[in-house]
Image (cartoon, rainbow, N blue to C red; front, side, top):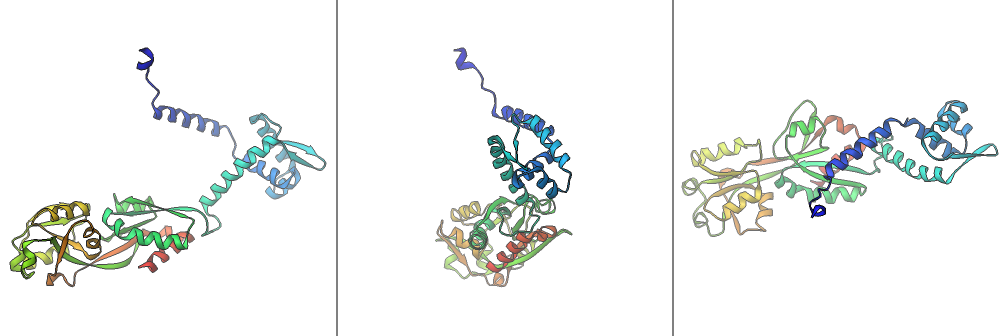
Amino acid sequence: MEENNAQSVPTERVDDRYDRQMFRILRNIDLNLLTIFEAVYVHNGIVNAAKILNITPSAISQSLNKLRALFPDPLFIRKGQGVTPTAYATHLHKHISQGMEAFLNALDLTGNTQRERVITVATSPAIGALIMPVITKKLRSVFPQILLHNVAITDAASQLNQRQVDLLVDSFPHSGQAITHHVLFQDSVHIFCRAGHPALALPANSANLSQYEFALLQPEGQRYTTILRRLEEHLGERRYGFSSYNLLTQAALVNDSDMLGLITSGMFSLVEKIWPLKMLDFPPLREEKIDIALHYNKLSAQEPLLKEIVETIRQAF
C-alpha cells in the first residue's frame, strides 16, 4: 500500500532541477575554450590554431590545460610537429561542431537564404484556413528548408513590434512606426443564410431583409464599421443577435436559424463545404471589399531570407 501511495516527483520540478544544474555547469565553462578546441582539432595543431585565431601558441596551450581540467581526458597527444586528437576529443568534436554550426545558422551572419529557419505566421483561425494552404504550397516549393509555424493573433501590435512573429496576415489593418504591410488581395462581402431560408424565395432587397437579425463574425478588436454602417443605411439600425470570433461558430448558427450572416467570398467557400449555406446578392454590398494584408516589422525585412519570403508570398496572390 505504501508503494501505491508513494508520490512521484512532478515533471516540472525535475525539469527545473535539470535547468539549474545545466546553467551552473555552463557558468563554470568559458565557452571561448570550445572555439579554441575546435580550432586545434580542425587545423591539426596548436601553432596552426594560433594563426587562425590570431593569438599566441602559449595562449592556446593554456586554454587546452583548462579544458583538460574539465574533461577526464588529455584531448590531444603530441605527434611530430603537431597534435593528434584522442578518441574522447573526436567524440567532443562531433557534438561541439554541430552545436556551433546550429548557432551560426541561427545568427545568419552570412545572409545565407538556404539555411534552415522556422517562420512564424500569425493569423485569425478564419484567415489562416483561407490563406495558409496557399502560402505553404508556394513557400515550400521555393524554400524547402523552412518550417512554417502558424499561431493565433493575440495582440497584433505587440506581436509585430516585439517581433514575436515573423509575419502577420489579417483582414484588419495594423499600423505603427515599426510596422509595414502589403495588401495581398481584396475579398468581396456578402450576406449568407441557410438553405431553405425564407429570404431565398424573395428579392434580396432592404424591405425583405430588414426583418432578420444578423450573426456577425468579429475577430477580437475588429468591428468592420464601414460595412456595418452601409448595412444600417439600407436595412435600418440592425439588431445583431449574435457575434463570434470564430467562423465555424458563426456559420453553424446561421445554418441552424433564420439569422443572416456577413461573410467574404473566400470564407464562404470554406463553410459551404460543411453546411448547405446560400449567398444572397444584396446590391448595396456589391462594391464592398475587405483587404487581406501581410504585416511585418520593418527591421525583419533586413533579414535576406525573410525579405525573399515576403516577396514570394506577395507573388502567390
